[in-house]
Amino acid sequence: MRHAIAHDLSPELALRTARAACAHYCERFARYEPRITWRDEHNADLQFSAKGLSIKGKVAVANGSLVVDVDIPFLLRPFQGRAVEIVERELQKWIAKAKAGEIA
Image 1: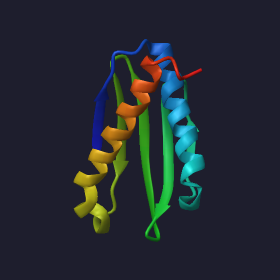
Image 2 (image 1 turned 120 degrees about the horizontal axis):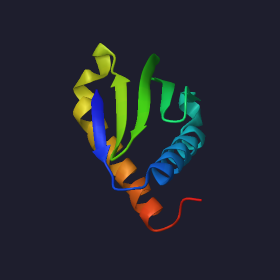
Image 3 (image 1 turned 45 degrees about the vertical axis):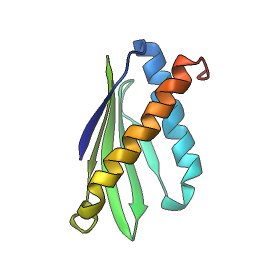
């Protein structure tokens, strides 16, 4: 599942926003054992467990978009459309927070 969310944030603010969102969700969903490893300033690997399955993906912060690319296991593919909706909604909230000056 690859999904890009458009934004009009400055590159620096987009990076701070992505890192803040990742840290928030790691804490909020700790029971799913999330792990995010930033490979460089703009790209991170992510992994978590759900329904006994290990799910891996990537996050990329680009000029004008935040890209989430997750390898959805076959058993969870029926929920892929719902997952895209949730990712879109949640990242739009973080973009709005950034625009409102709520991201340090």
